[in-house]
Image (cartoon, rainbow, N blue to C red; front, side):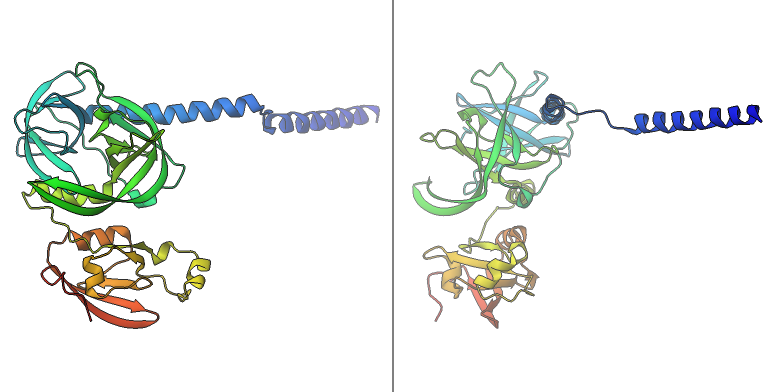
Amino acid sequence: MKLQRLLLVLIAILFVWNVVLTSQLNKEPAVSEETIINNVVNGFSTDLTKVAEERAPAIVTVESGGTLSTALFYRSENGKSYFLTTYHTLSADSITLRLENGLVSEAAIKGFDVFSDICMLEAEIPYEIAEVPFGNAELLQKGEFLLTFGAPRVVDYSPGVSLAMVSNKKTTVNNLLNYKDNELTYYIDLIQMSSILTAGYSGGPVFNMNGELVGMNCFTLRSSDGTSFALPVNEISLIAEKLLRNEPANKTMFGVRGKPVANMHNYEKASLAIELTQIEGYYIENLHSDSLGLHAGLQPGDILLSVNGEKINSESDLLRAQYSGLGEYDLQVNRKGEALALHLSIENGSEPAE
């Protein structure tokens, strides 16, 4: 009898001990404030260094007419390698590329678009370079960190890397361009970034933390304490494909400014008397004076539904319509709940709609 009691006591003790050990093993270790900070900083640094290391081979320094800028490898076709950079930094007399491994190669201009300032360079590179993945600039958010690359002040050094932050994912810039003795006014939507970039960063790529290309450095406001601008990748991809095919990257600037209805909150729709069930189209907040869209009869408050039968539900949809190069555009519009059909023509752009 005593032996049985002793065995029961031992079994009870072992059971309790097993429960205690199990609970201790499953218990998460105490996390201090210092541990949290270290994990965040180390993880953030790892993301930065990974993007910088993986993308560096595709980034080159461009020397032309005594000016330094930056270019990004785009694609290889038929034994030629093609790079994207800014046009304003180049001189047609001499263009030299310096790659990450020190290789120097002469390059020539394959094509350019004076409005977006994008230029495609052609060179013969004796080895393969990996293409970089393209992202979507529409998905950028204010406060998001970006990595941007640019040429140093001395050509013998490799392109540097800087940390930037999205200040505004869509800022409209009005530029007066002098080209072939003509003054041209145009509007362009750019990514506004908080960053201090030197002149050599022109044409340099801008990557998100996933290593996807989201833009190209255009210019920096010299009078600011760190504001620069980048052309969104959505527009870059459309222009680059046309330049690669030796097609003019003509853009029919509708002159509309707004946002996709799908991106609007319900309180925004309610305040603008838009049906909450309306999820398609592009809401027009304003139109630039003397723009083609204004002459076609578009008005602030209109919802642009389609262009030549193609639905317009995003910034990219609107860009594709403007780069189609057709010259004639049939617009389907929702105006205060009523369906309207409008026509936009480049040839008749100077004649206001009745």
